[in-house]
Structure formats: structure tokens, C-alpha cells
Image (cartoon, rainbow, N blue to C red; front, side, top):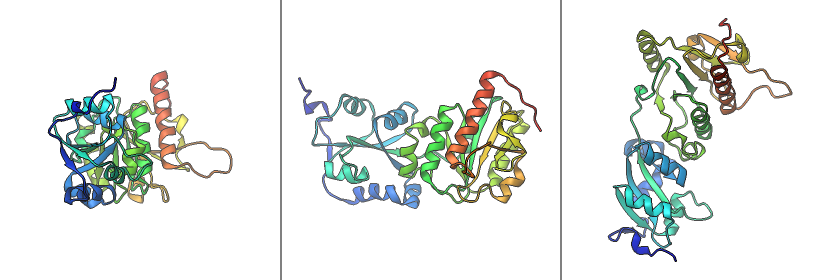
Length: 287
């Protein structure tokens, strides 16, 4: 027997028109400046919303379909998350869901954390990624997903770049962005201050850049040491400033006609090699 709609909040407020608040949420989809000023972004999907809640990200508002029978997951979410909850017409939800074939059941308006590098934990087994001026938000999300899956501790997005909180980045991370700290910084100087402070505290982080003309193949470099992996812009690779800061560079051996890998694929390949070395206990010789 189907559960009644009475299990949803009995005093739910409704959003049935493109009012000022709806327009504000809609602007979060395509306007980075408005996302930053509001300090919030939209999240869709069972796994991403569940991970945001599990990892303690502040949920500012839950928008849900006011004209359908909600799933057990949605009912439990609305019952347990103490925040503003608004019923919305399905057509409006579909617009906020980027006009997918069916309206999303729930959309969460989530608060952005501070862009603080200290959010990234640094231990003796540190493994992090720095992405230099990425142009594709999808690549940011893909690297977050790989870094989370392969045990990295955080991602830094540096310079004038695509946004970590762009809907394409959020979607392609499949929820991993709520488990892995991703921090935006304006330039290399902020990163180097943070790295030097960690070194002074006793963690000898090495900066390892990826380059087709690297010092050695990635398989021959010791990635068991505390490592910050530097991934270059999709078109131009690492900037001169980042190249100068690299302690070492590594290349990914390739065959066939391809001259390079997609940035997210390259990051995944090197992260996998780092995990392989750490799991196997192999120690390579540092050049």
C-alpha cells in the first residue's frame, strides 16, 4: 500500500511561479559570480545529496516535487534534515534540473565551504592534486572523482579557471566532491606558502608535474613519498610559473598516434600508479 502524501512536511511552503527566489536559484546554474556571492550551489541526485548530508555540508534549502508521491529516500531526507523545505511545481524543478527528461525529485541548495587550503589534511602519506587553470568543469569533477576513489587527500584548483561548483563539475564528481576537499586559489604563491608551512612542520611534500618530456617515466619515480601532483591546463599544460616550482616531472608512456591524454585521464593514470606503489610497498629511485 502506497504511503500517503501526509508523510511529507504538513506545513510545507510552495513555490509555483518563477518568483525572485526561483530566479536566484536558476542563476546559480550558469553564473559563477552569483554562486560565489550567494555562497551556495545546487545539487541533484540521491548519491550526491546523501553524501553532502553525511559529510556535514550545510544544506540551506531542500526543494522537492510537490505533486508526486515521494520515494522512501526523499521522505527520510525531508524528515531528518533540519532546514528550509519548499515544495515546488515539477516544471520549475525540471528547469533547475537543467531540463532533463523528468523533473528531479529533490534539489538541495548547499552552502559552499571556505577556500581554505587547511581543509586538505596533510599526513606522512599525503597525496594531493593541483589542477592549473582548467577550462573544463567536467574535468574538474572527473579528477575529484578519481582522486576520491584512489585515496588522495584533496584537490587544488589554481588560477583563472573553470569553477569547482559549476553544475557540470558537481555532476561529473558523482558526489565525491563532498568527500574530498577541493579548494580554489588565485595563484601559485598561496599554494607554495601552504606547502612550505607543511614542510616546516615535518612533511616533506614534493611537487611532481606531469609533462610529455618529463625527467622520467611515472613508473620509475617514487610516488610513495608525500606528493602534490601538478596537472596542467587542457590546452597549454603547466604554466611557466608552475614548471619552475616542480621538484620533478614525470611522463606517462604512450603508444599509438595520440600525443597526449585528457587532463582527467592523465591525473587518474598517475594517481593509480601512486596507489599501486603504496599498496605494493615498492620503492623506486628518485632521480
